[in-house]
Image (cartoon, rainbow, N blue to C red; front, side):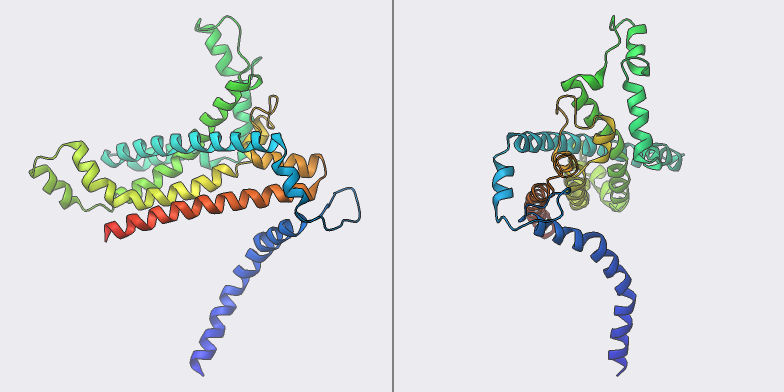
Length: 294
């Protein structure tokens, strides 16, 4: 009797969270799957079942593959940059003795601002007419005319990757720093006595202790960065000339621009399947690391 009552109590506490998840994730996700098999259009009151027609149309669309390629490049370079910068910052802060808390606060400042503020700030910094950076390059004599970075296909993409690294590296840094502080200090002392150099200490002591944490961070950031929409849309809108068009923006334009909600839903389902496959591979690797560490 007591066990049964206690079991009901658990569900009472869990129920609000389940309702929130159902409303914010499960229902939209199932709706996307359903609409992906229909010709749902935002300006038409009725729709019908079309089977796999949306998926065939999407997979035959060159713009889909262009956006997918941009998403892969965007995620790869952003992730590598975030992990490297975050790792270096964490290793440096781990050696700091005084004012460590102050450096932490200064480094996570980007996370204190809304995305729209960050986007408009970088638009102002990079603007070719009144932007701080282009005009500074002219004053320093590096260029004769102020460059408009966001109007150039290559530079617009590079700038977005740089901004994403600047924004995401502090999160990596904080988590890796926390993992570094769990490494037993006596192992470092033993390695020092045995004459191990810095690389050997990092490879055989530091890395085995933190690689699972780094792996989980890579999984989370891969999903997050691949699904990035707001920062790209607010700064470039997918331009110039679709140079920064990623899959989330492609799906948005198709759904809300062309009003083809059924086809847009097919894009989101394909995106989900791809990310699920990537996460599966990541977790297989992380599980192997965990077994090696036991």
